[in-house]
Structure formats: structure tokens, C-alpha cells
Image (tube, rainbow, N blue to C red):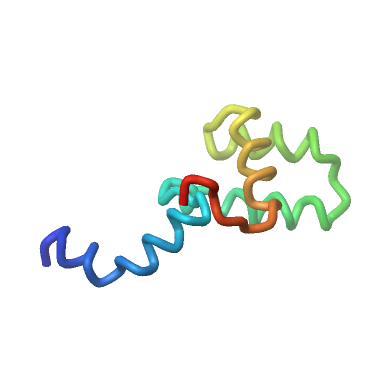
Length: 81
């Protein structure tokens, strides 16, 4: 299967993601966020969780905070979309 064929199959879905300002790269952080929620439910402090996830997933603490903020916000249509 060619790239263009896959793009055509998922065109409406990709357009919806684009209008909602969701980047395809965000999908690689789903496990990180799931683990964040589990640790938060267990009563751990956010700063500890962020430091732990930063080390575990080899991303900066700033990136972990970004992922948390992005995943917790309500889905809105972008102004450009």
C-alpha cells in the first residue's frame, strides 16, 4: 500500500485532527499521560511524577508539563482550522 492510499483512507480523520490542533506526534505520549494519571491517583505529587516520567521516557520535564497541559485541555477547533 502506498502512502497516498493510506492518506486517502484516513483523510476525514486527519482533517478532524488538524482542525482540533492535534499533531500526529502527540500519540507517542499517550502512555506517558496514562502513567501520569495512575501516579496522580496513587497520591504522588505532580513534581515527583514529572521528574520520574521525564527520566523514564527520556524527555525534558518541560515536555512532560506540556503533554499534561495539552492532554487535559478541552478539544477546541483551531482558529486556523
